[in-house]
Amino acid sequence: MQSFRVNDYDMAYLEVGEGHPLVCVHGTLGDFRTWYSVLGPLAKGHRVISVSLRHFFPEHWDAVGDDYKMAQHVSDVIAFIEQIRHTPVDLMGHSRGGHIAFRVAQARPDLVRKLVLAEPGGDLDASLPVPEGTPAHPPLAARTARSVEMIRAGDIEGALQNFYEGIEGDGSWRRVPAAAKQQLRDNALTFLGQINEQRRPYTLSDAQAIKTPTLLIGGGATTGSLSVMWRVLAEHITGSKTAVIPNAGHWMFEQAPLEFGERVNLFLAE
Image (spheres, rainbow, N blue to C red):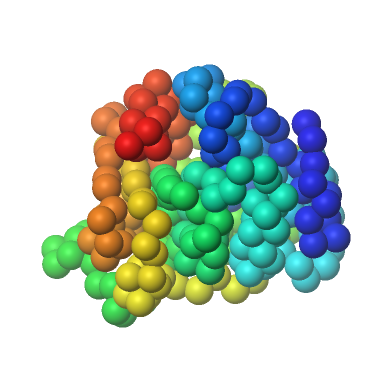
């Protein structure tokens, strides 16, 4: 583990491999360990740099303070990339980290050579309507709010199960490996910050502003808004490419690391 001093915060990261830098940004409840399963495939041709965002493991945050904001995390990633040799970098984000990567590319396209968004999280505003006939699903924000209530009541395990099964389906929590569950537990209190993180919805003009070559990846088994959002964004990001990882859900890089790594490597090599 190493760190860069970023906006008065020590931002931890892991680095493996050699080649052009690929910065990887985790999502909700993640940290630099999120990408463990795919580090091998990705590091064959890249200098993979997996970051932990402000207040995530190895920090054990007490949920005190008001700097857990989407804008702060975007600013931190920008400042982090500015310290890396050989910019512009390739940038990959998953879920909430995909939203951060999107905003980094939008704000500082000079820092990003290629962009990979693995089921980016967030909401679409009215300028980006979902296709007609798309099934309605309860918003993930409601699951997050319920998990926050459970954490405040002392039920961390229940909060994590509630959130995870809201994405991967009922009964999925019991199939999560012990190490992955521990990573989520280590970051459980970040839920308390996320509830007021001030994340803006994606707009049509946001999507059209992305000029960086972009790959959007989804899991073939993902349901709900996360299965729709990346497809809508792909329709409006100029020249974007898409890929589906069959028989995988939202954490597709853990469930099918070789297939995921192959898709990303092919795109980055183009």
